Image 1 (cartoon, rainbow, N blue to C red):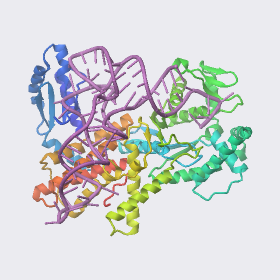
Image 2: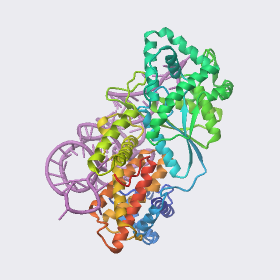
Image 3: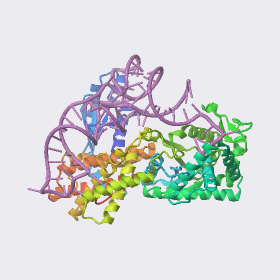
Image 4: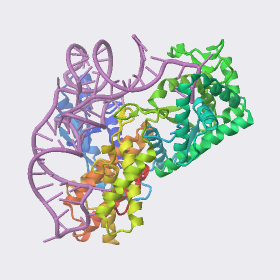
Amino acid sequence: MYRETRDEIKDILRDLTGQEDAELVDGGTHADLASTIAFSLARVQRRPPVEIARELGARLREYEKAGLFRVEIKGPYLNFHFGEEYLKKSLQAALQSGYGAIASQEVRIALEHTSANPNGPLHVGHIRNSILGDTLARAFKKGGYRVERQYYVNDIGRQIAIVVWGLTTLGLPTQQEKEDHYIARIYIAANRALEKDPGQVVEIDELMQRVERGEKEMVRRFREAVSICLEGIKGTLRDLRIHHDRYVWESDFIRNGDVERVIERIRKMPQAHEDETLWVDLSEEGFENRYILRRSDGTTVYAARDLAFHIWKGRNFEVLIDILGADHKLIGAQLIATLRLLGEKPPTILHFEFVSLPEGSMSTRAGKFVSADELIAEVTEKALEEVTKRRPELSDRAREEIASSVAIAAIRYDIVKVSPEKSTVFDWREALDFERQSGPYIQYAHARACSILEKAGEFSPAYQIEGPHEAALVKHISRFPFVLDQVVQELRPHLLAVYARDLADLFNTFYRYVPVLRSEGEVRNSRLTLVKATQNTLKEALETLGIDALATM
RNA sequence: GGGCUUGUGGCUUAGCCUGGACAUAGCGCCGGGCUUCUAACCCGGAUGUCGGGGGUUCAAAUCCCCCCAAGCCCGCCA
């Protein structure tokens, strides 16, 4: 209802003033929506804004829709207040399952996220990528888009070569831990060995050349090492409620000839240079450094495979979205520029800033990181303690299930609530906090709503909305589709996190001041309808955030 | 050295793109609330030169310029 009403008021203002861009802002405490258009008109008409507002207000009255909204003039401001009809229609919409969906879209989206190098477990930095990506994918799906979630597997890079080398030459104890942690152990040890004796680096180079030439046995060994690690990574992602529809293997683009084809196309570009290496001069596009695609030994670099990957995506999907760390900003911009020059579809890239530890930045190679598995285990343990304290009567199994949901909620929310452009420092105390502004806090509001509904049993919907707490709640509920649309249009998942938290806040205040089960008649039915609408909206929002909407906790 | 991003009460953070009416909330601090729909909750209070300086504007946390600080990038790594 919010989007529709907002658009309608915008149209009216545009008709009335002739201003194309009819400024409409959030009214804050003054109104539901407000317009400052009188100020800009004052400039052209050379009249005081208060006078203009007064006149506009008088003419606006004719457009006031019965109960939908009314206009109030406050000095130079035009304030719009939503009426009873607005509240009723908003509630009706919010009772529908799938509330929030925008009309079904035929656009196919390839959304790539996580794509961490398979040389160790995911750490708390990687999962910022995973959680941003998965939340966006969920938001797109909810909005009615067709999304394919992709994990790009870097299976032929130097880091994997180091793992393969370590597996065969170091003679370390075989796997006894989770797959990805096992590979990390090998990788870390191999790096130490290489540091001690740098001469062995030639062996790594040789492995890379052999795998790129397509030597069967070498390809098999690389794949095997990567597969082992990927098994572990998939397990972690599963714990986080994250699933990929397709794993795209980097080496496939070499095998199927795509990389060779793109190299040929690059060579024909006027910006291409071929000396000992093949590189593109992007200085016209504002990049100073060389965009190197092929080494002097004839092997290609990551960038070449990435071009092939994106060309493939561009031909199979209408929209390409990549989630990448801020360290990929330059190479991402160069990729986009090159794709444009080639006449191929560039991706939209959502970059997020780094997560570091209090003692400094994380490094898989140095073994300096907090793994996602460790985080999940710690948070789950704390959650189980909390559940046990609050619900001792539940079975072990029931408490464990709740604890698992609560833990994932805490982790996912903690990460998604911060805007991606902010760098963060991982903080155990914050990760283990289940209070306000946390995922569990929102789950709790949902569980409270469920509890009321369960105790109430059957009721017939009613729409008598009275009192400030109830109206505020309905108005916020009515914004959900607007927020969801904003999330997908602007690729800003944290807006949804903020929205859900505000909704939980409003419901908790309502819960405190407005009795539901102890009320009677139409009032009771209306309040139950409001609880149901809140519960449904919370559920949709939580699901989009990848958080379980628990009925009890 | 150049580029990108960030800087909002003691700590964390929304708002910034698209300027507008007393800057959002949490943690922590002080005080209060469980015979009443789950207290993972609620209510009240204290705490802000919105990094600093200049500019544009009727109006700047928001736009522009300069400076300072932090993170990231500038590789025949990915």
